[in-house]
Image (tube, rainbow, N blue to C red; front, side, top):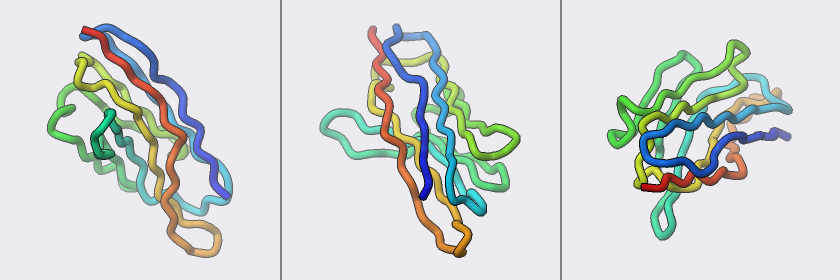
Amino acid sequence: QVQLMELGGGLVQAGESLRLSCAASGSISSIIAMGWYRQAPGKQRDLVASITSGGSTNYADSVKGRFTISRDNAKTTVYLQMNSLKPEDTAIYYCKVGIRNPWNQHYDYWGQGTQVTVSS
């Protein structure tokens, strides 16, 4: 069993910053990749940023230069630093972690989601 604990989110004004975190725990042999997705009302869930076990990062074009994904030294917590927030960044943000368990099985796990609201 794997648990993801998301923290952060909230209501901010345009131009301000927020930091999200997602900590993974449980039956984890290795983490393959970690990422953040977001879903606005009436829209599909889209990738915001991801980071692989090797440290390679990928960003949606809409957040490049404003958002930064990182992880802690233990590589079990992923962060999303969001700067220069815009009203169009308003969405529920979900953490996704791909893990390999002690039985060498690959599973993806999702966090519970955290609301980010940016007012103009």
